[in-house]
Image 1 (cartoon, rainbow, N blue to C red):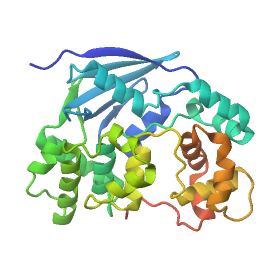
Image 2: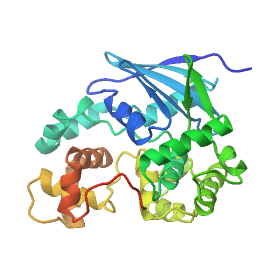
Image 3: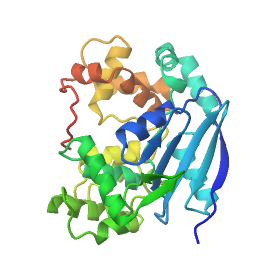
Length: 310
Protein backbone atom coordinates (compact mmCIF):
# COMPACT_ATOMS: atom_id res chain seq x y z
CA UNK A 1 0.00 0.00 0.00
CA UNK A 2 1.35 3.41 -0.97
CA UNK A 3 1.83 5.93 1.78
CA UNK A 4 -0.61 8.80 2.01
CA UNK A 5 0.81 12.19 0.98
CA UNK A 6 2.87 13.95 3.62
CA UNK A 7 2.73 17.68 4.14
CA UNK A 8 5.30 19.75 5.97
CA UNK A 9 6.55 23.29 6.21
CA UNK A 10 10.09 24.62 6.07
CA UNK A 11 11.00 28.03 7.41
CA UNK A 12 12.38 30.17 4.59
CA UNK A 13 13.21 33.58 6.05
CA UNK A 14 14.18 36.27 3.57
CA UNK A 15 16.06 36.46 1.40
CA UNK A 16 14.53 33.42 -0.33
CA UNK A 17 12.95 32.54 -3.65
CA UNK A 18 11.93 29.33 -5.40
CA UNK A 19 13.38 30.68 -8.65
CA UNK A 20 16.80 29.05 -8.13
CA UNK A 21 15.23 25.62 -7.60
CA UNK A 22 12.88 26.26 -10.51
CA UNK A 23 15.90 27.06 -12.68
CA UNK A 24 17.71 23.93 -11.49
CA UNK A 25 14.75 21.57 -11.70
CA UNK A 26 13.40 22.97 -14.96
CA UNK A 27 16.81 23.45 -16.52
CA UNK A 28 19.92 21.64 -15.35
CA UNK A 29 17.99 18.61 -14.01
CA UNK A 30 15.11 19.06 -16.43
CA UNK A 31 14.39 15.37 -16.75
CA UNK A 32 12.78 15.12 -13.31
CA UNK A 33 10.42 17.98 -12.88
CA UNK A 34 7.04 19.56 -13.51
CA UNK A 35 6.91 23.34 -13.37
CA UNK A 36 4.12 25.87 -13.55
CA UNK A 37 3.68 29.48 -12.53
CA UNK A 38 2.96 28.81 -8.87
CA UNK A 39 4.89 25.78 -7.72
CA UNK A 40 7.54 23.23 -8.60
CA UNK A 41 7.12 19.46 -8.48
CA UNK A 42 10.20 17.27 -8.48
CA UNK A 43 10.72 13.51 -8.33
CA UNK A 44 13.86 11.85 -7.03
CA UNK A 45 15.18 8.79 -5.16
CA UNK A 46 14.81 9.14 -1.41
CA UNK A 47 17.99 9.14 0.65
CA UNK A 48 18.74 5.71 2.09
CA UNK A 49 16.09 3.55 0.43
CA UNK A 50 16.15 5.12 -3.07
CA UNK A 51 12.37 4.83 -3.26
CA UNK A 52 11.03 7.18 -5.91
CA UNK A 53 9.12 10.04 -4.35
CA UNK A 54 7.74 13.36 -5.56
CA UNK A 55 7.55 16.66 -3.73
CA UNK A 56 5.50 19.69 -4.72
CA UNK A 57 6.91 22.96 -3.38
CA UNK A 58 5.19 26.30 -2.98
CA UNK A 59 6.71 29.40 -1.40
CA UNK A 60 4.35 31.48 0.72
CA UNK A 61 5.67 34.57 2.50
CA UNK A 62 8.48 33.16 4.67
CA UNK A 63 7.77 29.43 4.44
CA UNK A 64 7.98 26.65 1.87
CA UNK A 65 4.92 24.42 1.84
CA UNK A 66 5.78 20.89 0.74
CA UNK A 67 3.60 17.93 -0.23
CA UNK A 68 5.42 14.61 -0.64
CA UNK A 69 4.07 11.39 -2.13
CA UNK A 70 5.57 7.91 -2.19
CA UNK A 71 7.05 7.83 1.31
CA UNK A 72 6.08 7.72 4.96
CA UNK A 73 9.57 8.77 6.10
CA UNK A 74 8.77 12.33 7.05
CA UNK A 75 12.07 13.10 8.79
CA UNK A 76 14.13 11.77 5.87
CA UNK A 77 12.28 13.61 3.12
CA UNK A 78 12.10 16.80 5.14
CA UNK A 79 15.86 16.75 5.71
CA UNK A 80 16.57 15.98 2.04
CA UNK A 81 14.32 18.78 0.78
CA UNK A 82 15.82 21.26 3.24
CA UNK A 83 19.29 20.33 2.02
CA UNK A 84 18.65 20.78 -1.69
CA UNK A 85 16.81 24.06 -1.04
CA UNK A 86 19.72 25.25 1.16
CA UNK A 87 17.26 25.75 4.00
CA UNK A 88 19.31 23.64 6.38
CA UNK A 89 21.48 26.55 7.54
CA UNK A 90 20.82 29.65 9.62
CA UNK A 91 20.46 32.56 7.21
CA UNK A 92 21.52 35.12 9.85
CA UNK A 93 25.14 34.10 9.37
CA UNK A 94 24.82 34.59 5.61
CA UNK A 95 23.38 38.06 6.16
CA UNK A 96 26.38 38.94 8.31
CA UNK A 97 28.76 37.82 5.56
CA UNK A 98 26.90 39.97 3.04
CA UNK A 99 26.92 42.96 5.39
CA UNK A 100 30.69 42.62 5.74
CA UNK A 101 31.48 42.48 2.01
CA UNK A 102 30.02 45.23 -0.24
CA UNK A 103 30.83 43.25 -3.39
CA UNK A 104 28.89 40.21 -2.21
CA UNK A 105 26.05 42.44 -1.00
CA UNK A 106 25.77 44.04 -4.45
CA UNK A 107 25.73 40.70 -6.24
CA UNK A 108 23.24 39.26 -3.76
CA UNK A 109 20.85 42.18 -4.21
CA UNK A 110 20.74 41.42 -7.96
CA UNK A 111 20.10 37.70 -7.42
CA UNK A 112 16.62 36.18 -6.91
CA UNK A 113 16.13 35.29 -3.27
CA UNK A 114 19.41 36.90 -2.25
CA UNK A 115 21.00 33.62 -3.30
CA UNK A 116 20.88 30.25 -1.64
CA UNK A 117 22.76 27.68 -3.75
CA UNK A 118 20.17 24.97 -4.38
CA UNK A 119 21.83 21.67 -5.20
CA UNK A 120 20.97 18.32 -6.74
CA UNK A 121 18.59 16.08 -4.82
CA UNK A 122 21.47 13.90 -3.62
CA UNK A 123 25.11 13.03 -4.35
CA UNK A 124 23.82 9.91 -6.12
CA UNK A 125 21.64 11.96 -8.48
CA UNK A 126 24.49 14.38 -9.15
CA UNK A 127 26.90 11.53 -9.84
CA UNK A 128 24.46 9.72 -12.10
CA UNK A 129 23.47 12.83 -14.02
CA UNK A 130 27.10 13.86 -14.49
CA UNK A 131 27.99 10.47 -15.95
CA UNK A 132 24.82 10.25 -18.06
CA UNK A 133 25.42 13.68 -19.60
CA UNK A 134 29.08 13.11 -20.46
CA UNK A 135 29.83 13.93 -24.11
CA UNK A 136 26.20 14.43 -25.16
CA UNK A 137 23.84 17.36 -25.18
CA UNK A 138 22.03 18.01 -21.93
CA UNK A 139 18.70 17.76 -23.75
CA UNK A 140 19.71 14.29 -24.95
CA UNK A 141 20.73 13.30 -21.42
CA UNK A 142 17.43 14.54 -20.01
CA UNK A 143 15.47 12.57 -22.59
CA UNK A 144 17.54 9.46 -21.84
CA UNK A 145 16.91 9.89 -18.14
CA UNK A 146 13.17 10.04 -18.69
CA UNK A 147 13.11 7.03 -20.99
CA UNK A 148 15.14 4.90 -18.58
CA UNK A 149 12.95 5.99 -15.67
CA UNK A 150 9.75 5.27 -17.59
CA UNK A 151 10.94 1.80 -18.56
CA UNK A 152 11.88 1.07 -14.95
CA UNK A 153 8.66 2.71 -13.68
CA UNK A 154 10.71 5.16 -11.64
CA UNK A 155 7.97 7.72 -12.19
CA UNK A 156 5.63 9.51 -9.81
CA UNK A 157 2.09 10.44 -10.82
CA UNK A 158 1.22 13.88 -9.46
CA UNK A 159 -2.21 15.38 -10.20
CA UNK A 160 -2.46 13.23 -13.30
CA UNK A 161 0.99 14.15 -14.61
CA UNK A 162 3.87 11.67 -14.72
CA UNK A 163 7.09 13.10 -13.30
CA UNK A 164 10.22 11.06 -13.97
CA UNK A 165 12.82 10.59 -11.26
CA UNK A 166 16.47 9.95 -11.90
CA UNK A 167 16.50 6.15 -12.13
CA UNK A 168 17.08 4.25 -8.90
CA UNK A 169 20.41 2.43 -8.54
CA UNK A 170 18.54 -0.88 -8.63
CA UNK A 171 17.03 0.08 -11.97
CA UNK A 172 20.40 0.94 -13.52
CA UNK A 173 21.93 -2.33 -12.32
CA UNK A 174 19.07 -4.27 -13.92
CA UNK A 175 19.78 -2.85 -17.39
CA UNK A 176 21.58 -5.07 -19.90
CA UNK A 177 21.51 -2.40 -22.57
CA UNK A 178 19.52 0.67 -23.47
CA UNK A 179 19.07 2.59 -26.75
CA UNK A 180 21.27 5.68 -26.71
CA UNK A 181 23.60 4.35 -24.01
CA UNK A 182 26.99 3.01 -25.03
CA UNK A 183 28.24 -0.08 -23.25
CA UNK A 184 30.92 1.99 -21.50
CA UNK A 185 28.48 4.63 -20.27
CA UNK A 186 26.14 1.95 -18.97
CA UNK A 187 29.03 0.37 -17.05
CA UNK A 188 29.87 3.76 -15.59
CA UNK A 189 26.26 4.29 -14.50
CA UNK A 190 26.26 0.84 -12.92
CA UNK A 191 29.46 1.71 -11.06
CA UNK A 192 27.75 4.81 -9.66
CA UNK A 193 24.70 2.72 -8.75
CA UNK A 194 26.84 0.16 -6.94
CA UNK A 195 28.66 2.89 -5.04
CA UNK A 196 25.32 4.35 -3.98
CA UNK A 197 23.99 1.03 -2.70
CA UNK A 198 27.25 0.47 -0.82
CA UNK A 199 26.76 3.80 0.98
CA UNK A 200 29.74 5.50 -0.66
CA UNK A 201 27.60 8.42 -1.91
CA UNK A 202 25.91 9.28 1.36
CA UNK A 203 26.08 12.95 2.30
CA UNK A 204 27.16 12.27 5.88
CA UNK A 205 30.04 10.05 4.74
CA UNK A 206 31.36 12.44 2.11
CA UNK A 207 31.10 15.58 4.22
CA UNK A 208 32.80 13.90 7.18
CA UNK A 209 35.99 13.53 5.12
CA UNK A 210 38.36 16.34 4.17
CA UNK A 211 37.39 17.66 0.74
CA UNK A 212 40.55 16.36 -0.96
CA UNK A 213 40.13 12.91 0.59
CA UNK A 214 36.48 12.73 -0.45
CA UNK A 215 37.47 13.81 -3.95
CA UNK A 216 40.09 11.05 -4.19
CA UNK A 217 37.60 8.51 -2.88
CA UNK A 218 34.99 9.46 -5.49
CA UNK A 219 37.51 9.22 -8.31
CA UNK A 220 37.87 5.51 -7.57
CA UNK A 221 34.39 5.07 -9.09
CA UNK A 222 34.50 4.18 -12.78
CA UNK A 223 33.70 7.23 -14.90
CA UNK A 224 34.25 9.77 -12.12
CA UNK A 225 37.09 12.14 -12.90
CA UNK A 226 38.14 15.35 -11.13
CA UNK A 227 35.34 17.49 -12.60
CA UNK A 228 32.63 14.97 -11.78
CA UNK A 229 34.00 14.40 -8.27
CA UNK A 230 33.89 18.15 -7.63
CA UNK A 231 30.33 18.30 -8.96
CA UNK A 232 29.24 15.49 -6.64
CA UNK A 233 30.77 17.19 -3.61
CA UNK A 234 29.75 20.76 -4.40
CA UNK A 235 26.44 20.31 -6.20
CA UNK A 236 25.39 17.03 -4.64
CA UNK A 237 26.28 17.46 -0.97
CA UNK A 238 25.67 21.19 -0.57
CA UNK A 239 28.64 21.97 1.70
CA UNK A 240 28.67 25.32 3.43
CA UNK A 241 32.27 26.45 3.76
CA UNK A 242 34.37 24.70 1.10
CA UNK A 243 36.37 27.00 -1.18
CA UNK A 244 36.33 25.27 -4.62
CA UNK A 245 39.77 26.30 -5.88
CA UNK A 246 39.72 23.46 -8.40
CA UNK A 247 36.92 25.33 -10.20
CA UNK A 248 38.92 27.73 -12.37
CA UNK A 249 35.84 29.80 -13.16
CA UNK A 250 35.96 30.99 -9.55
CA UNK A 251 39.25 32.76 -10.23
CA UNK A 252 37.80 34.60 -13.19
CA UNK A 253 34.65 35.48 -11.26
CA UNK A 254 36.68 36.91 -8.36
CA UNK A 255 38.78 38.96 -10.78
CA UNK A 256 35.67 40.47 -12.37
CA UNK A 257 33.71 41.05 -9.17
CA UNK A 258 36.60 42.62 -7.26
CA UNK A 259 38.16 44.51 -10.16
CA UNK A 260 41.43 42.59 -10.19
CA UNK A 261 43.85 42.64 -13.09
CA UNK A 262 44.61 39.34 -14.73
CA UNK A 263 43.69 36.04 -13.12
CA UNK A 264 44.28 35.77 -9.37
CA UNK A 265 46.32 32.95 -7.90
CA UNK A 266 44.88 30.42 -5.46
CA UNK A 267 46.44 32.44 -2.66
CA UNK A 268 44.79 35.65 -3.84
CA UNK A 269 41.40 33.94 -4.09
CA UNK A 270 41.87 32.51 -0.61
CA UNK A 271 42.69 35.99 0.68
CA UNK A 272 39.52 37.49 -0.80
CA UNK A 273 37.44 34.56 0.44
CA UNK A 274 38.50 34.90 4.07
CA UNK A 275 35.67 37.40 4.49
CA UNK A 276 33.20 34.84 3.13
CA UNK A 277 33.68 32.31 5.94
CA UNK A 278 31.78 30.31 7.06
CA UNK A 279 29.81 30.52 3.79
CA UNK A 280 32.64 30.24 1.28
CA UNK A 281 30.82 27.73 -0.91
CA UNK A 282 27.66 29.83 -1.02
CA UNK A 283 29.65 32.94 -1.88
CA UNK A 284 31.72 31.10 -4.50
CA UNK A 285 28.72 29.73 -6.34
CA UNK A 286 26.96 33.10 -6.23
CA UNK A 287 29.97 34.99 -7.59
CA UNK A 288 30.48 32.41 -10.36
CA UNK A 289 26.81 32.42 -11.35
CA UNK A 290 26.61 36.22 -11.44
CA UNK A 291 28.73 36.57 -14.60
CA UNK A 292 29.47 33.00 -15.60
CA UNK A 293 30.44 33.38 -19.24
CA UNK A 294 32.67 36.40 -18.58
CA UNK A 295 34.35 34.50 -15.76
CA UNK A 296 35.05 31.57 -18.07
CA UNK A 297 36.46 33.92 -20.68
CA UNK A 298 38.73 35.58 -18.11
CA UNK A 299 40.45 32.27 -17.39
CA UNK A 300 40.64 31.31 -21.06
CA UNK A 301 37.81 28.79 -21.11
CA UNK A 302 35.54 28.61 -24.17
CA UNK A 303 31.94 29.73 -24.01
CA UNK A 304 29.75 27.02 -22.55
CA UNK A 305 28.05 24.89 -25.15
CA UNK A 306 25.25 22.41 -24.78
CA UNK A 307 27.73 19.54 -24.90
CA UNK A 308 29.37 17.96 -21.92
CA UNK A 309 32.79 16.32 -22.12
CA UNK A 310 34.00 15.69 -18.59
